[in-house]
Image (cartoon, rainbow, N blue to C red; front, side, top):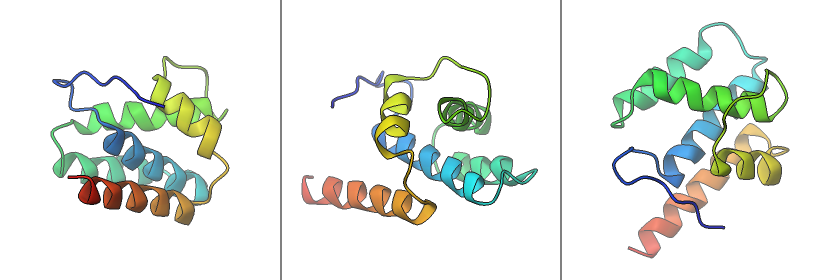
Length: 107
C-alpha cells in the first residue's frame, strides 16, 4: 500500500513507524504516566516535527487500537494498526529496522 504524505508536513512512513514503536513501547509498559511524553520529546529532538505533533500521532494509534475515543487517524495509522497491531514491541522495532534497511538498499 502506498501512502500520500504531504512533502512539506514532515510526515513519512518512517515517522509513522517510529510513532507506532512509541505506541507499542507504552502499551507494553501499561501506559505509565510520562513515558509517552518522554519518548515523543526524544523523537522530536531528532526530527523536524514537534513533540505535540508526535504525541497526537501516538494518540491516534491508541485510539485505533481501542484504548481511547475515536480520532481522525490517517490511512497509514489505520493500516499499521489493522495489519501489525498484534505485534509485540520487539516485533515493531524489527519492522522499523527492516524498513530502514530497505531504504538504505534502495537508495
